[in-house]
Image (cartoon, helix red, strand yellow):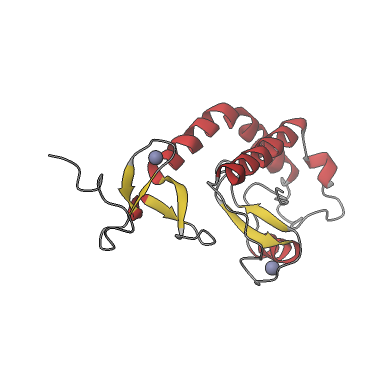
Length: 176
Ligand SMILES: [Zn+2]
Ligand SMILES: [Zn+2]
């Protein structure tokens, strides 16, 4: 039996909304794609399965850097009484940022850039949080192992988000 989706398109059938994933080439119901505010159809370019695969591939390639990053971060936060970034007695940002971490961050930056170029991610013109436009919008990560799992925030919302929800991975500056 043929797949019920392969002859349908969004225009032909509004009851079963489908979309073709450019990565695996399959046409799938819209529900198979992650929700992505800021995209015209509200869904990511790649299907959910392809997103998971790409993240797994990314983790396999960059897992070592990630572990090194986590180690350096937990070392720098060995004293639970010193909370926050750059407190006196704590390590400075430069001291925490190991070469591994720098490489990881540049890989994440590249992954986001490539995703924006391929249409898997859309960089909105305005901040998700405050709706302000006309300024730099950061791709804010809560987890560098999910390089495409970003919130698009302006500098001040990004800083507030970091302060409100301290990242398990440390001072998580924006990836532009
Ligand atoms: Zn796919
Ligand atoms: Zn904002």
